[in-house]
Length: 159
Length: 280
Image (cartoon, each protein chain N blue to C red):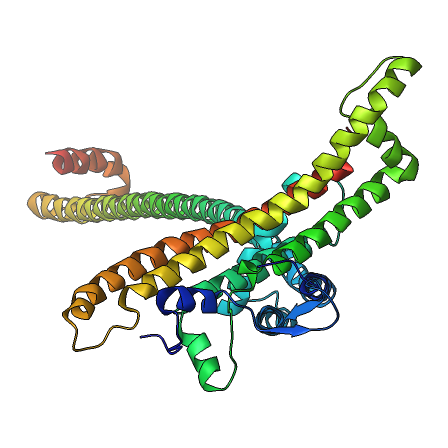
């Protein structure tokens, strides 16, 4: 238990080890640690950025979807309105057409009735004339009594 | 149980255990090499370097392996301590601190190996004496402490310049106003400075040496419990469990001591070096 020359060798060995550690071991490990720290920091930053991008994209997608939905609704409304209008117009025209047809038919019927009545009256008038002439047994001058006969025929037609 | 069945009983056993394997290299008691201390220190240094340099060569900034993780943990811890403590920028202090911690810890750890195992093996191989704990050798701890002392002076001069370094020797810690006071206080300052500087390597080396020497001695004393006992003796059977319990407790406790001492040696070195570069 005494100090001997051993201490020089021990000291030198110690310094040599320290030098080797500094020269060959330390830098590469510290370098690796620092590089990894940088990588992790970059990764975290990238993750943050990705998260932000995702949020933005989601918002944009939402906006697009909302817009599309609005537009679809608009188109739907427009189509409904258009179809309503078309139906309304068709109804309108059908009614007009129907009314027209009915009116035409009524007109025709009235004309036909009038004509038939006229004819009937004429026929009846001539029959009356014929009957009267038979009754009087003489020729009724159609021309002279035309006015009278017409009046009569009219009365008959009315009656 | 001891392999060294020498005359002298317990005293002989203890003395034998505290005897270095030596080789004289000159005249006088100083010119002697403690072969065992040097051998184990160099062996442990090589083991440390192989593991450490391998880990560092394979160091990747990607996913680290388990060894790399362990080495990185130590390096980051020590790097943090040095950055916190040491005011100037340096490339050498942190590796130095790591070396101190690793080497001192490994050398202390030799104390964990059963106290008779390696000496008995060496005895069987024809080596008469062997002390396996290099830090229980004052030469080892003093050698490291002197290196630290030299480094302290080197860093002090490097960071302050020779003029300021020498000037501080005479003007600190007692600061005087005026030329007369300065001259009067100069001898006291110089004396205190010398004491302060010399106390550092002494306290560093003696603290580590004392702890390890005492630890080793207690292991030896525990081993003495059944020294020379035979299986026929009842005393042996009574003492063996006690020896086991005592050895177990002391080993467990010593794990703390060896780690703590390694850390203290490292930490004090860093602190001393930081103090050296700071202004007084």
